[in-house]
Length: 215
Image 1 (cartoon, one colour):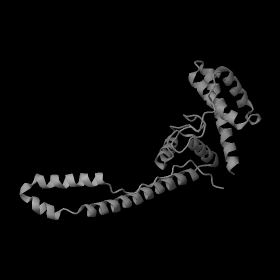
Image 2 (cartoon, helix red, strand yellow; image 1 turned 180 degrees about the vertical axis):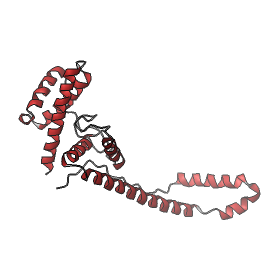
Image 3 (cartoon, one colour; image 1 turned 60 degrees about the horizontal axis):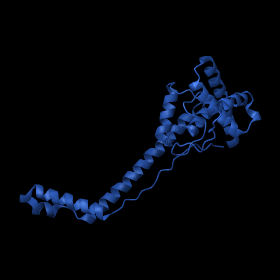
Image 4 (cartoon, one colour; image 1 turned 180 degrees about the horizontal axis):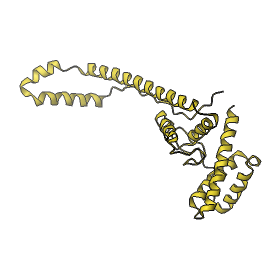
């Protein structure tokens, strides 16, 4: 079964014919006549009517919408081809990272993530953002991680990392976040590295669980 990745629908905006647009058009055409007063009458005769221009603009708007949608769909297909060509483990990790990425769910951003990964600039085992799902705009879907007892939570997070299957999924997500935060702030490099390793293990395990849920 195909896994549905994070996706941002493309909004439809119809062209609107407003009095404000028509007033701006009248000013533009008047300025064209005033710039060449000796030919004002000839210019006026050659200028299209407001209705003609508005009709042309609506048609151009619709044509541009079609081009934009076609180009976006092409980028999605390209991104999916790149992902499908990866080995299973990498494919799961990429999809998991994309579902947690703090970027709008547009194909240009996904292609950028894939390019960075192909160039070795992103380590999927240690992604540069928390492992919690984001919405189509890139915002976190609520906070599982707020706490005033960070030190105590870190201790629990390390316990969870040792035996993740013994804890609820929400606590595993929270543990991953706190391990990442602890690794970033800990001045003890050895302990920080150990927390990063623990977080990596949780990240991979959460990815496997996510794959199982969608299977």
